Length: 226
Image (cartoon, rainbow, N blue to C red; front, side, top):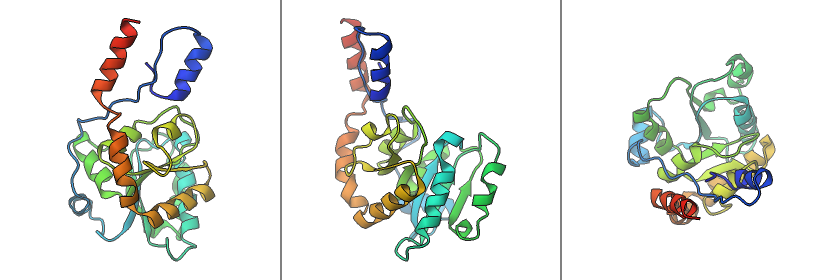
């Protein structure tokens, strides 16, 4: 069983003829149920009228937080996207100094909502539910644990065209696909708010049905009796 089509292709390259299937990781259900955006923002003290994008998870170089911060700088040049806030929720797993210049940039600092400490499982729902969408500006990836989280809490995603991310986030259905650079990510964030959350939600909910534990167990059984 592989969790992305890219890994399945790699497996076939190294182990030709062996039974294998791509099955997306089932959705995590240990973080609680979806709550309203209003309730989540009250908990986190976020303005209910703000446009909020979320970067969630451990902060490591390959995850491209610096690219997203530069994208936010680009969005500040456009009157229609000047009011976008970036919620950063996750611990630094490398030297925070690498990001300090961008985080302290006076052009974007007022638009940053920083929660860069440990986030317990019971708190995860507040961050996902407070956001308008989740952005994964990765430089490289096979898959991401953030994607099933976004599906579970029914949040559209903007992901970069790397590894297995695009196959898990069908473009203009579950979210939008950007190239891993600041300009492209800024364009897709702007497009997301033009289209609006309601554009994505019906298709996201339909796609979400693929991510069940039943699908995973059925695939394991089929391979076991191959």
